[in-house]
Image (tube, rainbow, N blue to C red; front, side, top):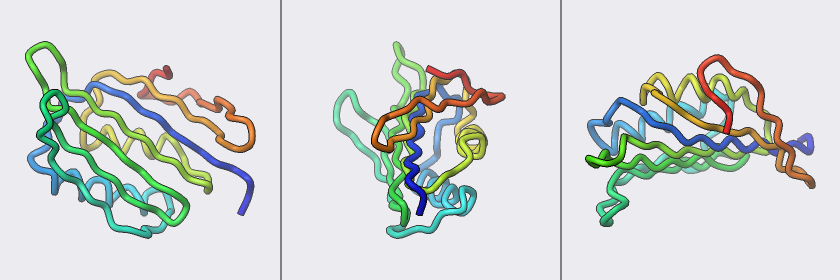
Length: 134
């Protein structure tokens, strides 16, 4: 395997409010084949009711690492927020990942970065159509 370690970090405001943690779990599971990876531990998503952190959090373990997210329920002073990361020691197309996020969550605004986390951590963020880099 090449010495390449991609890490996509995404923070966004989204307009889709998921109906359930199960819908979020299916969304996370559906990402894996889109990026040509293999699931090592199936996706899991659960509702968190901790005050100030209410929302859904989820993770899927892939054979080359993981993807994880947390969605915060909207509050009167805060919009729907989504934080997502995908780390893999195999390359993936960040456009495919951003599109997958947008298809389910309907991105309104976002900031994201792509890093190569080899020995030196390098910012390798490309310019994509939808997202605005951090």
